[in-house]
Image 1 (cartoon, each protein chain N blue to C red):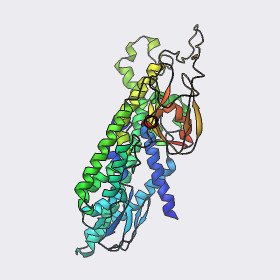
Image 2: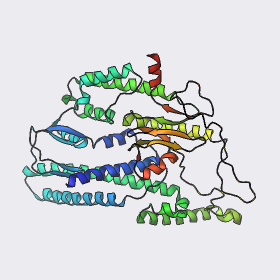
Image 3: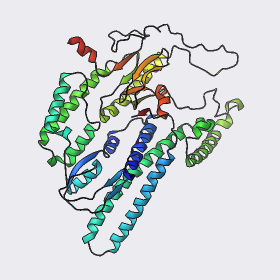
Image 4: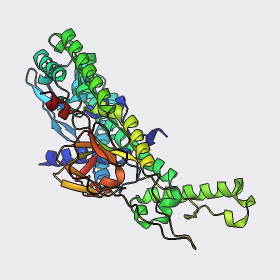
Length: 212
Length: 235
């Protein structure tokens, strides 16, 4: 039935939103989820617009109050979804603005961005470079003029050693984490930890661990 | 930079709690179904209970179009049991993850639907205070060798309030702990290969107690929030 399918759309999107908020890295763009949500919003918005037209045209107030009531509820739901979408997109844009050179240099990370985000990145980087050059880079000696020099530390990278809160979704048994000294952790279902992001990164992609 | 914060503020957790299902008894008729992204609700008939998302229940209640059936975990008996449980042991009891948010919203918009409203409110406050003091006690266990924190029984609000502190504290501990070790650097010409860290404690990892009384500087332990071991020691 459609409803069971749609329950997972919203909860998966909220999970993607939470992951994005908690992690320092950019996750792959959720094209399918977002298309479904936008489709739903569009159909609802059309109905809302039609209702509002109808309410304006009708002189009597008898059925209007029910129609208005229904339309208001639909508007509220659409507003909630819009808020989620906007927040998700803004978070990703902020991360893009923070690490433009790093993303441009990494093909893999670039593929996590949607087409529009890649365009945004290209335009933003052009402006950024131009601004840097005009402000002071031109006046520096030639060897110091690069802004994408990884060895000299000019590239800002997301710090994968931030600590994040995460929830275990499956029984993973005893996992060994490599660090200064190795430590073992028994990861059971429904446990939550605040732990180094680097350690649980491989599990997030397979959805065995989700950030909370 | 607001979007780059790693935790939800209370308004956002309240927004998230809005999707939780709750039972209402409407006093209006709506023969259509409400089609939302996560399901269809309706039709609504007066005096017939129906389950809707919390945000819808509160909207309807504000317009006095329904009566909200208070969930079981917000009744006086249940809360008194929880409070007794919380006071008697160091471990945190299991609560609804959105306990604070849902109770706050229900207090604000549907006080008349709650039996013994004042009593329930004081109980909720007491439970919050007891848990908060337990959490503060648990935080004191963080030492310079803690590498992760177990937070399984916290509600969403408590977790989000704890996160900024705990994440930055643990990060700083990690930085200090790893500061003496050679960091991997890209190979500059004419420099020796970096060596990996040689730590000699490989055999102490096996039988680590969960909570340590005097942590050694090179041994790392798992810190749990609630000290069950201390409890069993006293028994």
